[in-house]
Length: 128
Ligand SMILES: [Fe+2]
Image (cartoon, rainbow, N blue to C red; front, side, top):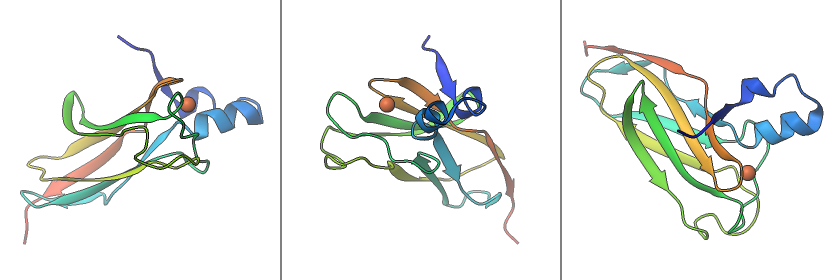
């Protein structure tokens, strides 16, 4: 089992440590409420404010979206997906929820390991 890092482990460190954590941390953005059995967009961006290096030996290889212990979706990237400049990797996932979700994103940097987002709760309601 790999160690899983999170921004909160480093948030009280010196600026260089916070910068390191910032550019590795996935951030979930979505609505708080979804309609049952309807398409729902979940955006995941890696980096709170700072772009991550994007070289063959140092880049993000995948982003996963989890609902508790269930893997909902995964996006994989090649060495050229985002060109060669530093980037804030960003993915839009579309899911069709049946019940409320506790979402978390995981992202893998091939030099600095697996990083997790904060958990986001999405209440699922019936359409009116
Ligand atoms: Fe990295």
